[in-house]
Image (cartoon, rainbow, N blue to C red; front, side, top):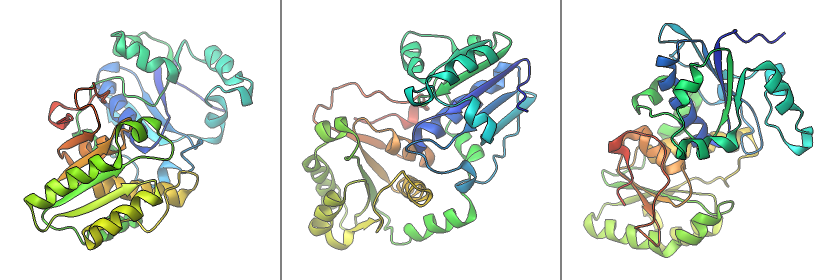
Length: 305
């Protein structure tokens, strides 16, 4: 039997690693003022074939604002009841959720509401059971929350430490998104990353490059060009398995330990790495004046475009 408190907020985390982490941080920040129990639920979905407990230790935050706070894997029943409404489940979860909750915000509405200045806190304080599905943050959060919410498990931390062993005092992070992101392909071509890397090498002879990419051809091209300066994963990127997601997390934390991160347009992954490490972050793109749709992180983590 699934029980939700009569007055509560439940947020279902959607999207990839960076999206889920930023939504959890936004929820925790808002929980301090909600005045009711708050739960962030992690479900396995397409693009996230991994449980929260496979990646992180239990969150240190269990009470915020005098009320229970949970960041955890969804139970089997919750995964059914609170599934994302889709044609393949005949959209039945949408009907069930509207019956079980006094108000529901589905993920496709979060960004339009945010852009329109919607007050998510006032909505959460509206009484009754509130449910939101989200892959974009909706409330300003402090980067300090990340260390309280997300601590890699010991075996994952070991992989992160091993990946960073070859870093020099001047290691830059480069995240090149390709296979499933047309905006990154169109707006962040490889030649612009090469220009940035060459500039850094001209400044510091000991520059090393931590390369995170989902494209093997890009990886091979940069390895040919920069040789031993390149530090990168030997695995092919995949979000369809636990091992692939663990590797993605290792890459994110490795990027967070570099001195400066150069990321791709249309991807929040490298932005999240910058927030984890409070490091300078720059989006590499053709039009440097084009607005960058960032998350709601602190001012000092803003894109230095």
